Length: 181
Image 1 (spheres, rainbow, N blue to C red):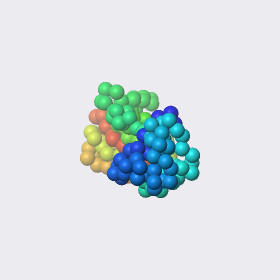
Image 2: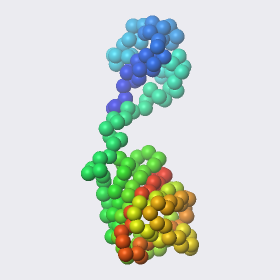
Image 3: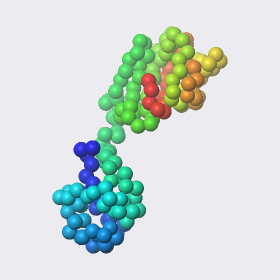
Protein backbone atom coordinates (compact mmCIF):
# COMPACT_ATOMS: atom_id res chain seq x y z
CA UNK A 1 0.00 0.00 0.00
CA UNK A 2 2.96 2.36 0.35
CA UNK A 3 3.11 2.77 -3.46
CA UNK A 4 -0.39 4.24 -3.55
CA UNK A 5 -0.78 7.97 -4.10
CA UNK A 6 -4.51 8.62 -4.19
CA UNK A 7 -4.06 12.30 -5.05
CA UNK A 8 -1.94 11.50 -8.11
CA UNK A 9 -4.59 9.01 -9.25
CA UNK A 10 -7.35 11.59 -8.86
CA UNK A 11 -5.28 14.04 -10.90
CA UNK A 12 -4.51 11.42 -13.57
CA UNK A 13 -8.19 10.47 -13.99
CA UNK A 14 -9.22 14.15 -13.97
CA UNK A 15 -6.76 14.99 -16.74
CA UNK A 16 -7.78 11.90 -18.73
CA UNK A 17 -11.38 13.20 -18.62
CA UNK A 18 -10.07 16.63 -19.67
CA UNK A 19 -11.64 18.26 -16.63
CA UNK A 20 -10.22 21.34 -14.97
CA UNK A 21 -9.69 21.40 -11.23
CA UNK A 22 -12.72 23.71 -10.88
CA UNK A 23 -14.96 21.48 -13.05
CA UNK A 24 -14.21 18.34 -11.05
CA UNK A 25 -14.52 20.19 -7.75
CA UNK A 26 -17.96 21.40 -8.79
CA UNK A 27 -19.05 17.87 -9.83
CA UNK A 28 -17.76 16.44 -6.54
CA UNK A 29 -19.24 19.30 -4.51
CA UNK A 30 -15.92 20.17 -2.88
CA UNK A 31 -13.90 23.34 -3.12
CA UNK A 32 -11.21 23.65 -5.80
CA UNK A 33 -8.78 24.30 -2.95
CA UNK A 34 -9.67 20.99 -1.30
CA UNK A 35 -9.31 19.13 -4.61
CA UNK A 36 -5.92 20.74 -5.16
CA UNK A 37 -4.80 19.67 -1.68
CA UNK A 38 -6.00 16.09 -2.35
CA UNK A 39 -4.14 15.94 -5.67
CA UNK A 40 -0.95 17.27 -4.09
CA UNK A 41 -1.16 14.79 -1.19
CA UNK A 42 -1.70 17.54 1.38
CA UNK A 43 -5.19 16.35 2.37
CA UNK A 44 -6.66 12.87 2.73
CA UNK A 45 -10.15 12.57 1.27
CA UNK A 46 -12.83 10.71 3.19
CA UNK A 47 -14.25 7.52 1.72
CA UNK A 48 -17.42 9.44 0.92
CA UNK A 49 -15.43 12.07 -1.00
CA UNK A 50 -13.59 9.31 -2.87
CA UNK A 51 -16.92 7.73 -3.83
CA UNK A 52 -18.17 11.05 -5.18
CA UNK A 53 -14.89 11.68 -7.05
CA UNK A 54 -15.02 8.16 -8.50
CA UNK A 55 -18.58 8.71 -9.71
CA UNK A 56 -17.69 12.10 -11.22
CA UNK A 57 -14.64 10.58 -12.95
CA UNK A 58 -16.55 7.43 -13.99
CA UNK A 59 -14.03 5.06 -12.39
CA UNK A 60 -14.56 2.40 -9.72
CA UNK A 61 -13.76 3.66 -6.21
CA UNK A 62 -11.27 0.82 -5.69
CA UNK A 63 -9.18 2.12 -8.61
CA UNK A 64 -7.79 4.78 -6.26
CA UNK A 65 -6.31 2.00 -4.09
CA UNK A 66 -4.56 -0.06 -6.78
CA UNK A 67 -0.78 -0.07 -6.52
CA UNK A 68 1.18 1.30 -9.42
CA UNK A 69 3.30 -1.29 -11.21
CA UNK A 70 6.86 -0.49 -12.12
CA UNK A 71 6.97 -1.78 -15.70
CA UNK A 72 10.66 -2.67 -15.35
CA UNK A 73 9.58 -5.27 -12.75
CA UNK A 74 7.46 -6.98 -15.41
CA UNK A 75 10.41 -7.70 -17.72
CA UNK A 76 12.50 -10.83 -17.17
CA UNK A 77 15.89 -10.77 -18.88
CA UNK A 78 17.19 -14.09 -20.14
CA UNK A 79 20.18 -13.98 -17.77
CA UNK A 80 18.01 -13.01 -14.79
CA UNK A 81 15.47 -15.84 -14.86
CA UNK A 82 14.78 -17.57 -11.59
CA UNK A 83 15.97 -21.15 -11.90
CA UNK A 84 14.74 -24.15 -9.98
CA UNK A 85 16.22 -27.64 -10.06
CA UNK A 86 14.15 -30.54 -8.82
CA UNK A 87 15.97 -33.87 -9.09
CA UNK A 88 17.15 -33.97 -12.73
CA UNK A 89 14.60 -31.47 -14.06
CA UNK A 90 15.35 -27.78 -14.30
CA UNK A 91 12.85 -24.98 -14.58
CA UNK A 92 13.37 -21.38 -15.67
CA UNK A 93 10.63 -19.02 -14.60
CA UNK A 94 9.62 -16.73 -17.47
CA UNK A 95 7.19 -14.77 -15.32
CA UNK A 96 8.71 -12.25 -12.91
CA UNK A 97 7.29 -14.17 -9.93
CA UNK A 98 4.39 -16.32 -8.75
CA UNK A 99 2.01 -13.45 -8.05
CA UNK A 100 -1.09 -13.00 -10.14
CA UNK A 101 -3.12 -15.66 -11.87
CA UNK A 102 -0.61 -17.00 -14.39
CA UNK A 103 2.98 -18.19 -14.43
CA UNK A 104 5.07 -19.46 -17.32
CA UNK A 105 8.24 -21.52 -17.24
CA UNK A 106 10.56 -23.59 -19.39
CA UNK A 107 11.10 -27.15 -18.20
CA UNK A 108 14.26 -28.96 -19.33
CA UNK A 109 13.90 -32.73 -19.21
CA UNK A 110 17.15 -34.61 -19.86
CA UNK A 111 17.06 -38.11 -21.41
CA UNK A 112 15.97 -40.92 -19.09
CA UNK A 113 14.25 -38.64 -16.58
CA UNK A 114 10.69 -38.11 -15.43
CA UNK A 115 8.82 -35.28 -13.75
CA UNK A 116 7.77 -37.64 -10.96
CA UNK A 117 7.53 -41.28 -9.95
CA UNK A 118 3.75 -41.30 -10.21
CA UNK A 119 1.03 -39.28 -11.88
CA UNK A 120 0.46 -35.97 -10.10
CA UNK A 121 -2.39 -33.47 -10.16
CA UNK A 122 -2.78 -29.83 -9.17
CA UNK A 123 -5.54 -27.27 -9.09
CA UNK A 124 -4.19 -25.19 -11.96
CA UNK A 125 -4.91 -25.52 -15.65
CA UNK A 126 -1.79 -25.95 -17.73
CA UNK A 127 -0.91 -25.40 -21.37
CA UNK A 128 2.39 -26.78 -22.63
CA UNK A 129 4.30 -26.40 -25.89
CA UNK A 130 7.20 -28.64 -26.85
CA UNK A 131 10.10 -26.42 -27.95
CA UNK A 132 12.73 -29.13 -28.53
CA UNK A 133 12.97 -32.90 -28.60
CA UNK A 134 10.14 -35.23 -27.81
CA UNK A 135 8.56 -36.35 -24.61
CA UNK A 136 6.09 -38.90 -23.32
CA UNK A 137 3.13 -37.40 -21.49
CA UNK A 138 0.76 -39.44 -19.37
CA UNK A 139 -2.71 -37.95 -18.99
CA UNK A 140 -4.61 -40.06 -16.48
CA UNK A 141 -3.65 -43.53 -17.70
CA UNK A 142 -3.28 -42.62 -21.39
CA UNK A 143 0.12 -42.09 -22.97
CA UNK A 144 0.93 -39.50 -25.64
CA UNK A 145 4.23 -38.80 -27.39
CA UNK A 146 4.66 -35.10 -28.10
CA UNK A 147 7.28 -33.69 -30.44
CA UNK A 148 8.64 -30.19 -31.07
CA UNK A 149 5.77 -27.96 -32.16
CA UNK A 150 3.08 -30.02 -30.40
CA UNK A 151 1.06 -28.57 -27.55
CA UNK A 152 -1.36 -29.82 -24.93
CA UNK A 153 -3.88 -28.42 -22.47
CA UNK A 154 -4.04 -30.18 -19.13
CA UNK A 155 -7.24 -29.44 -17.21
CA UNK A 156 -7.16 -28.76 -13.48
CA UNK A 157 -6.80 -31.89 -11.33
CA UNK A 158 -6.01 -34.16 -14.29
CA UNK A 159 -3.32 -36.62 -13.26
CA UNK A 160 -0.25 -36.30 -15.45
CA UNK A 161 3.45 -36.99 -15.70
CA UNK A 162 6.22 -35.99 -18.13
CA UNK A 163 8.77 -38.63 -19.08
CA UNK A 164 11.75 -38.40 -21.42
CA UNK A 165 12.85 -41.92 -22.31
CA UNK A 166 14.35 -40.69 -25.57
CA UNK A 167 18.02 -39.96 -26.29
CA UNK A 168 17.84 -36.16 -26.50
CA UNK A 169 16.90 -33.34 -24.15
CA UNK A 170 13.26 -32.22 -24.19
CA UNK A 171 12.40 -28.56 -23.60
CA UNK A 172 8.82 -27.72 -22.66
CA UNK A 173 7.34 -24.23 -22.38
CA UNK A 174 4.32 -24.19 -20.11
CA UNK A 175 1.92 -21.81 -18.45
CA UNK A 176 -0.19 -22.63 -15.44
CA UNK A 177 -3.05 -20.83 -13.80
CA UNK A 178 -3.13 -20.30 -10.91
CA UNK A 179 0.64 -20.59 -10.49
CA UNK A 180 1.49 -23.94 -8.90
CA UNK A 181 4.80 -25.73 -9.22
